[in-house]
Each structure stands twice: as C-alpha cells, then as structure tokens.
Length: 53
Image 1 (cartoon, rainbow, N blue to C red):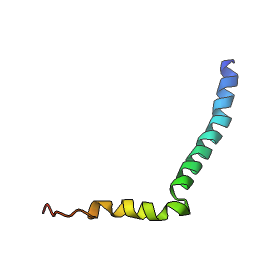
Image 2: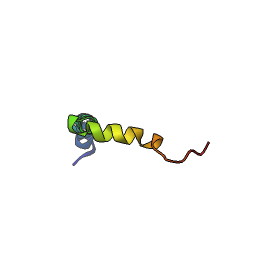
Image 3: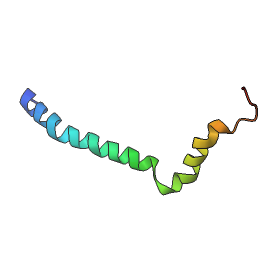
C-alpha cells in the first residue's frame, strides 16, 4: 500500500468508521432496556449509610 493510498483510506473510510463507532457506543449506553440500571448507577454515590460530614 502506497502512502497516497493509505492517506486516501485514512481521510475517508477511517473517519467514517470512527463516526459510526461513536454513534454506536453512545447509542448503546442510552438504550431503553438499561434505563433502570443507569438511573441506579447515577444515584449510587448518594446511597451511603454513613455520613462523613
């Protein structure tokens, strides 16, 4: 693979692959079936039994 061919691949397809991976990962974290566990994880730091203050 020549430098020019690699550069063309990196400019076009690699950027598209990174955008698709980003959209997939963001979409995966906000899927409706995980709404309850995400809410529980968000409240977890406030559920301590002992108060340090």
